Image 1 (cartoon, rainbow, N blue to C red):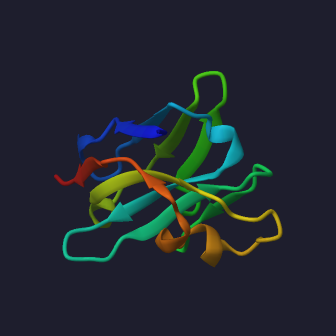
Image 2 (image 1 turned 30 degrees about the vertical axis):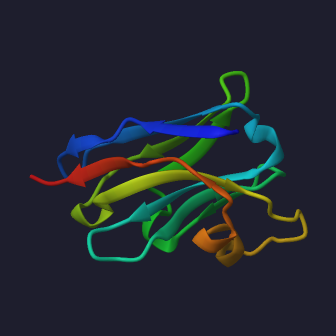
Length: 129
């Protein structure tokens, strides 16, 4: 049973940075599209960023230029580097993986929570002064 465990969340001031980590155990991240999703208070869960099997990066418009997704295969860990954080970035961030065909090249597919198969329990990020 593949397990995903997020860490790195916390309280940060607007304009600050955080790096989230997602460690996978019981399986390898290499065979999946891997991404980060956020559920803001009172909102539906939304895709933030995702890595395709081919290493293509997808981002929702609101985080482009500020967030960066990456993966360390040796550590079986997915990362999300978040810079220039804004209050609207507040929410629970979830690591997730799913089977997405290499034929898919549209961001909407990669950022759709419904296509993901496995989820971590989330880590809370609060951006506030």
